[in-house]
Image (cartoon, rainbow, N blue to C red):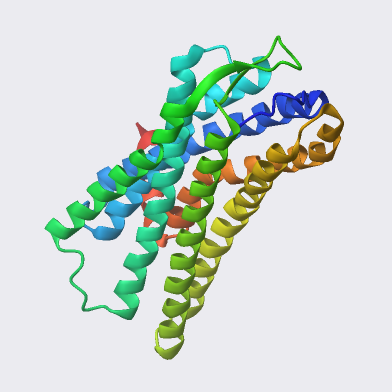
Length: 301
């Protein structure tokens, strides 16, 4: 996000330099462990021709891509940006590609679950069609992240000259990127909401014995996605509005509380990369059994 050059936000920056590195370090460790375990379990015990397993695999990969940027983010909040212009562009691109691909695959998983339950005779998972969907998903994710590659640069804040920031090169570019992210979130949540409402309606009409468990899982999926990303998207939208309004140092105090809220929402949203394995994989009995087998094999060797 664009950092307004008129404001130093010294107290907010100090808060971020303490809290963010601690939380992100924990998130990196949990995400690496969780998502790598997902990939190992899928490779050893699961059928990778299964549509659901392929989506889970790609979701884990996208979360790992997102996680790769977090160590640089930890360093950034402690010492400001010290890695140069190229790595600034690369880190922002990795973050965005991970975010977009994760959101896209969550949306595709929702559509797949919807078709499996509501339209079980659908043939959308034919190999050729499915391969095209995966290619389009990754292509869209990387294309959507291109603004980070093109418009990010290292800047020196005029109010606090010793600090270097890895930001968009102007407010307009940051605003456009924010609105793009907001639109994707609204579209993804709308699709997920529609799919899961129809799934619940279908399950309620069925006589399956697993209705309660399925409803609970579906509820958790939607709620965690919304709670994680909705506050963050709202705050980054509000920040673009305040950035345009700040014309003097006296107006910085008005936006300072929003910066604290931004840090909290960012921590919550970025933690989603390690929550995904729990929600989409480890709540399943089959994967828990696979994990138990894997751990037994590791500790017995």
